[in-house]
Amino acid sequence: MIGRRQELNLQFLQIIDALLLAVAFWAAHTIRYLGPVWGIFDGYIDDFRSFQWILIVLVPFGPLTLENYGFYEHPSRKTVGKSLAQLGRSALIVGLIIAAGAYFLKKDVASRAVMPLFAVMGGIALLVRERVTLARYRHRVKSGVLRESVVLVGTKADNFAFRNAFSPEQVMEIVVAQEIDILSQPVDALIAALHEHSVGRVLFVGGHSEMGRLNEYIGACETEGVEAWLSADFIRTSIARPEFDAFGSRPMLVFRAAPSVSWALMAKHLADRAIALVLLIFLALPFLIIALAIKFTSPGPVIFRQARGGKNGRPFTIYKFRTMVTDAEMQRDELQRMNQMQGPVFKVNRDPRVTKVGKFLRKSSLDELPQIWNVLKGDMSLVGPRPLPIYEVEKFETTAQRRRLSMKPGITCLWQISGRSNITSFDRWVALDLEYIDNWSLWLDAKILLRTFPVVLFGFGAK
Image 1: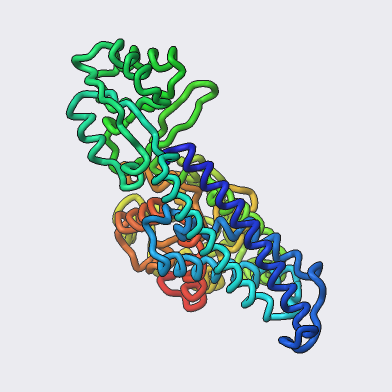
Image 2 (image 1 turned 30 degrees about the vertical axis):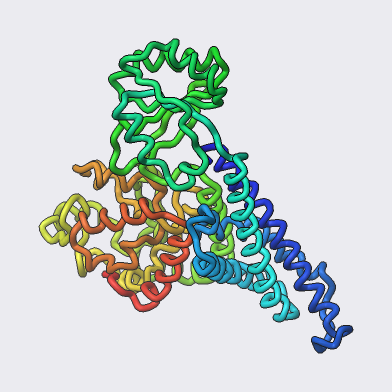
């Protein structure tokens, strides 16, 4: 399966799995609820209404977590053991989300037996669904239902290379009915092939030098009512991933070097703001204590505001608890000779501009707390490349340094948990940011957040 068909199939499987999880949870509760009657459990529990809030977590987050761990990759490429490992990791994350929901929403899970029962029943249901899907897929391939005839159009070399690059699934699903040499055969040869083989799709694999002729051939497909698929691998990129999109009514082939719009990215944005709102409420008292400590120990405002470079370099105002004297910005040029960072970034260990309270706030990273407001506003994320002052962004010299701006900046990041100020090379800092961007996932965000707590608690790398 290719492209849009694969996307629709994924969404269909996710809906099925969400329903299976809901049914498995209801069945687990029913078994525990009727357990005392059957003599397999002691003590009665509340009816299902008290557990319905858990479904709000299971239905959306279950399939998203499974997708994040690769559960929906083609089942023919996986063993049962790999599927079980993916299910186990997903169950752990969903369990943590449910535990967090119970804590923050003050919900009481009266029976702990329901969740283990659900984990077993849900896991079995998902595994059986996957094996049934695989069996059905193999049957449909064997019976010829999934076999699709296509015509290849390109140079002889391009056609040969394209066929040799078929994946095992494509080999089973695709039959190349005929190959058309775009250099030596006229468009009439394509029309004759369409009529002879009754194909529904033509794959154009020619290079950019044949663009003029490709336009004529694609026009023939349009007239015949046959889909025309244009390969764009003649555009060589080392990082950006090609995707199809539309600009109004104009079709566009897009090359993205950062995560594109997806359910996972939307979940990240929603989680950012939800967690930020909860944190602002719970941290109201610490905010007040820190504000009073700053106000009574040094003159000047409590909150430090500065223009920083956000996503794609767009300026925004960042908020931090003030840790320096009020004229700190004016003293920066005088301290330039003490800069311990290589590159456009300015960092000074034992900065003389830092106040006594500010030193503690920096060591404990408490000065970063007002950035939770930036997260709630949408300027920042909980996890992402650290935003730099505009005057430092303007000094970026390489494309790699600019590419770190392709994702929304965050409060914590790989640099934050890898030594922070102990990393004196800006290139190393950038490499960590690009590693995050190129490998982004919800699970990576969760790991960074979990590793941030001990770093903040013990002040590793903070200066």
